[in-house]
Image 1 (spheres, rainbow, N blue to C red):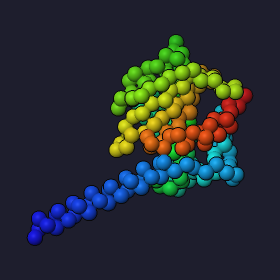
Image 2 (cartoon, rainbow, N blue to C red; image 1 turned 30 degrees about the horizontal axis):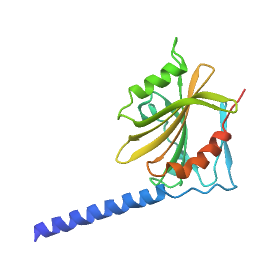
Image 3 (cartoon, rainbow, N blue to C red; image 1 turned 90 degrees about the vertical axis):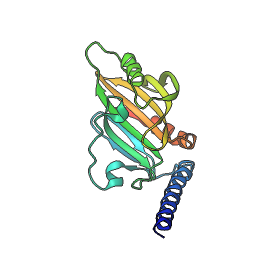
Image 4 (cartoon, rainbow, N blue to C red; image 1 turned 180 degrees about the vertical axis):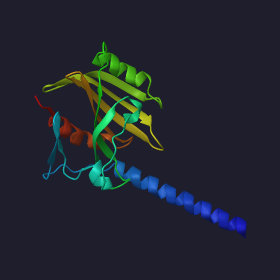
Length: 195
């Protein structure tokens, strides 16, 4: 009798976790809506448009969030992260701006290359290229990596301004990246450094 209860509990637990994972995977493949109702994030260095329906981590968690001191093991400190949908624990699309000073004698390209050589867990399906859009230029990388339970697809754009590195990082669940491409482009098109 006791064994049956344990088995039933185990089945319920596995079923519950499977349903949650399938729900997150289904949300990851939904295409977010681009609509009016956007707003602007602005600090003393840069600004960008937050798409309608997206929320900052402070809004999502309804309290100030401490910045990540080592954003995904890349040696960068998070400045701001937004997510879609703006529900606690339910985000399937993310955009982060993270930063780090360039060390003396270091340039953007060497720092960019070094960050991913040392990445842990290891990254896969890597594609690197130079990035140029409007007044922005730097280095771009796309890759897949596990972080926690799921695998994620990343697109990181490395820029330099006044001796500081700025990384514009987009990521989604591994199967949902293409659905967010137009939203990510919208964010990039509106990202500006202040003079």
